[in-house]
Length: 396
Image (cartoon, rainbow, N blue to C red; front, side, top):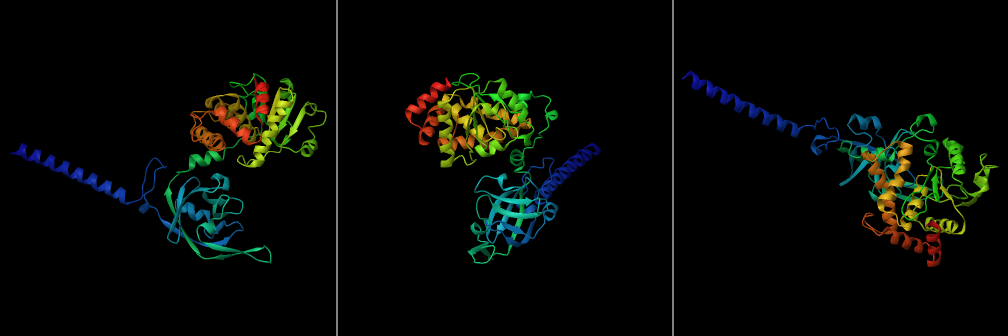
C-alpha cells in the first residue's frame, strides 16, 4: 500500500512540473521577448509604441521629430534595429541609422543626426513628408523659398526587429585608418591598394588599379607613386580630378606621374547615368589609343575604379568569380574583411553585384554571359564594333 501511494505521489509531482513548464512558456509568449540572441524578432504586442510630434519638415521632405535619440534608446530602439513608423493608419518599416546612405536610394530610414542630435524620418533621395502625407510644400517669395504645412502633427515609433539591420549597417559604415603602421600585414603596394588586374582575357601586368598617387590626405599617395613607377606605368586614367585640380597638387610637379599620358575623367558615382556611360567610353578609347601599362585610379581606388575595372574584366572574358574576387581585394586591404565575414557578402552584393546587374539588365551574374553583356553596354555607351575590336586587341 505504501509503495502504491509513493508511485502515485511521484506521478502527481510530474504532472505539476509539466503544468508549471506550460505556464512559464505562456508567460514568455505574452511578455517581452528575452533571449541570449539579441537579434531575435520582438513580438509586436511586446514592444511599446512611443509617439512624437513633428518639430519641422526640411526642404526636401525630411521630417524632424521632437523626440530625442535617448528617448528611443530608453524604449529599446537603437542603431541597426528595424522599427515601424505609424503615420495615421499607415505603417512604414525602416532601419535606424546615422546617414541617408545607410539605405539605398528610394528607401526609408530613421536617421539619428549625430551632429545636430536630431531624430529624422526620411527617404533617401525622396520626400518622406509627401509620400507619407505628413505635409504639403509650396514655393514662397520669402526666404528660404518654400513653406511646409504640417497635415499630421504626430507619429508613432515601435521596435519591430532588434538588430535586424545591424549587419547591413556595419557593412555600409566600414572604417579604416590612413596610418601605415596600422597595416603591418600589407606590403607598401597593398597599403596603397595598388595591384595589377589578373583575370582571364587581360594580359598580365597590363592594367593596374590603385588609390590616388596624388592626394596626400589619405597617407597612401607616396606608396602608390612608388608602385606605379616600379610597374613602369605609361598611361593613367584619373577618375577623380579635373586637369586643373590635378595640377594644383603639390605632389604633381616633377613627379613620375606627370610624365605619363593622362586622361582626367572626373567620373561621378551615378553609375546608371548617361554621363557615367559617356566617360566609360572615353576611358576605353584612351586605352585603345595609348600604350600600357595603364593605371586606373580615383580617390581610394574602390568605387569608381572598381566598377570601371569590373566592366573591362567582364568584356575581356573574366568569370564572375574572378571579377568579384578582384573587386573585394580592396575591402580586404582597407578594412581587413575576408570571405568568411558576413560583411564581405553584404558589401559585394550592395556594391558590385547590384551595380553590374542593373547595367547589364540581368538578375544573376553567375548565369549571365558577362562578356556579351559588357560589350552590349559599351555599344550603348557609343562604342562602334571597330572600337571594340581595337580594345580587345589591346587587352590580349
